[in-house]
Length: 192
Ligand SMILES: Nc1ncnc2c1ncn2[C@@H]1O[C@H](COP(=O)(O)OP(=O)(O)OP(=O)(O)O)[C@@H](O)[C@H]1O
Figure (cartoon, rainbow, N blue to C red):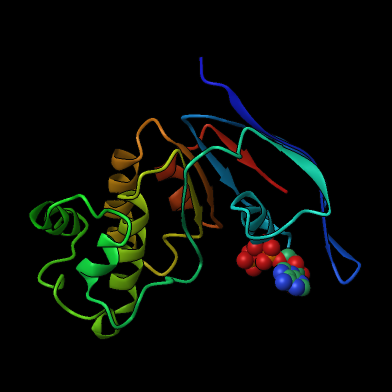
């Protein structure tokens, strides 16, 4: 049986304003955990702490340290002057070009691999950011409102692809969207 990851008594404040107060939870490995909570409740702060981008004021993260992590942030964080393919290659240098182009086509990204990202639509950029994270080598995939802005039909295709590619991995994803929740089918939903 897979071990769980534990977040124990986590506290974080900014300018003496508490954001996370005594947060304790368990994240089963190899499963999908959703986080859904109102805006401003500290979801992104928690994710930044789990990724090591932010220090908690207090608390213990048990089991996270040696995990390889991959993430999709609320922003695409793509290199706008590089092509779509070159952005994806940043995390999957050993995959050949035809494999990567085929992976793009499976989420509806046709004939755009050689275009610089700044020439692409918002929804195309989003899918490239998601695919870049999915094709990386990781144990823990952290997704902060990853599917936001995609139309429902595209969302369904991308979520099915995400589920297929991340099978057996630990996924933590933030959403406010019922369709995303039902398609991702998390084993637990955390409300901060
Ligand atoms: N670097 C920072 N400096 C000061 N305050 C911050 C910082 N980062 C976040 N905050 C504050 O922490 C609180 C939680 O922010 P956070 O982005 O974690 O919320 P969230 O639940 O992810 O919100 P949303 O659903 O809108 O993305 C907010 O009040 C925000 O203003």
